[in-house]
Image 1 (cartoon, rainbow, N blue to C red):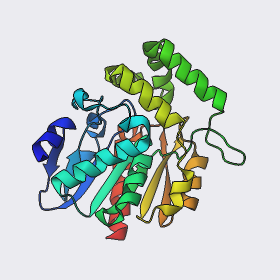
Image 2 (image 1 turned 120 degrees about the vertical axis):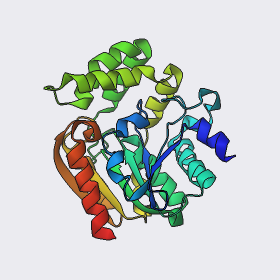
Image 3 (image 1 turned 180 degrees about the vertical axis):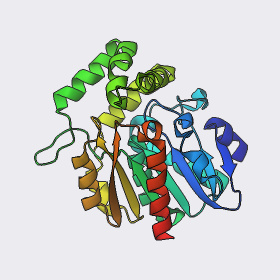
Length: 269
């Protein structure tokens, strides 16, 4: 069972094998390689676990099930299955983007398994709703998804640089575009719909795991208002707005991202 899960999710384990577990979960259209500038900074003190979701990176695509992944709960079950197979306890879960909400669902399901949840660029709902500001109108999301359906490469080429930000370093946008395009197309299209139509606002008050929200100063996917909302609604939550720009500070500002995580963990241990 352990070996099957290791192969299914391309699990890699590094660092201090006797240390507390820190589990990194990547965002939409990415893979564990996106943590390559951050994860090594924790290897001296922590047991570092990385993985790929099905359809991403080197995970086993044969394990994909459209019914299972019709909601974020299927991805949360992935996280829990990995924890069960490896017998991971007292886990510090670090999730980027949609994996922040996936992590929230996993922590709600099994609160005793997780010590901390660290969310990088999270959003519980991307679509504006009354007084809630998610950053997008419904027609914006519908247009984005229609563009993905019609020309995924064109969507990735035009949107990846905007999502990444940091126009002075165009290679970052190129890397994100190539990552999007490596993702299995059918998986990407379904995951995008599940992500952008998700609404996890009512889950936030149920999150008892102490959490840190890391928010870039400028992020077209998850504006600062979204981070403030999460910090207000999730018990035991802290917000840190960092000077980085773009939706992927673990790539564009890894030193600052790493330092904020280290500071948070040091303050609670």
